[in-house]
Length: 444
Image 1: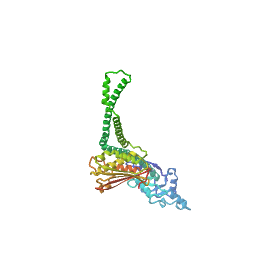
Image 2: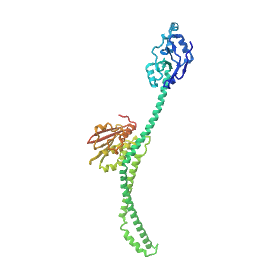
Image 3: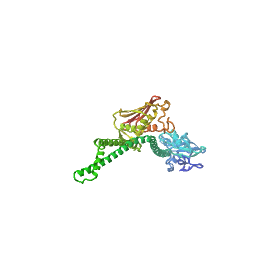
Image 4: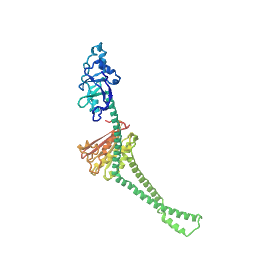
């Protein structure tokens, strides 16, 4: 009997490559009447060194398989070679080998192997064509390597998709932030124009007063020069004396005191403008990836300053209850975005003249709690379960993106915290934000 050959090749007549095509070993099958000893010699052939089993075929169809393990078990038995050596291989073969079609997808083949073949692995599997005719042998380890390679490729694809998702997520956060900021710019312009107006007025008044003071000083200096002999008397002396009499009532100690008050008011106005610009800058800047220590009370106050014009426009009173808090590790600009979303929503929910928003901060069990409560129109029960869903909004078209609360929820969870809501229609809404002090709290 000629030794069977084992080669990798494309199956004859195969229309197109399949997942198992590269794994096909075109191994000559064992005929049913081949003796056990002859099959043992086939396994000794170096060309079959990597095979665990050989297929037994009858009329071109596999009816079983014989493994090295089974032959070794028999030959190690007392007189095993003598008792079984001349018998046909059908006496020892496994009559239920794993048979797979060459068209079987790789993942399905892996599941079949996991179900059919036990540990330790003692058999290979048999590959057949669409008609069930024998094509060759497949190695279990080859399937496992192919699955591992595919998983590696899919893992790389997932990593790239995750990177793209994070990039898109950051862009979405920034877009929502800019959209929220854009809605408040008009009101903030008014907030800046108010102090800017009286700063301009104070500067003009100060410039006028300084002009009078300059004339008074010049007239007095001319008179002093004549009296001290530093200059000869002239016809202008009387004019200088008249200027002094005219300007002195306007430039006296009280007037200089008023001038100082004007400058103080001017500095106060410039400080207000600086605070508004600083708050806008802190809110609109790109977030850095690293966490940093921050005072939540200062973040709350900063957010309240940004929405101050909305509070005044709707005549909403703010009750601020600030507890003593430790600094927390967070991304301040992102926490500011959460606070701004909650405050803006609270203001927009108030449609009556007795508007009231309570903003309370406190620390409890290693966590910082931020409560934002309004006495607005409330949220319908059927909407409560969806308010954190992306693009969900109950506001009229053009007044909301539906992303504010979704992004706020995401930001809080990324900080290891949680955000909860309770509401009663016609009574109001309460949002509670819980943040761990160390920035790595466990969700509960």
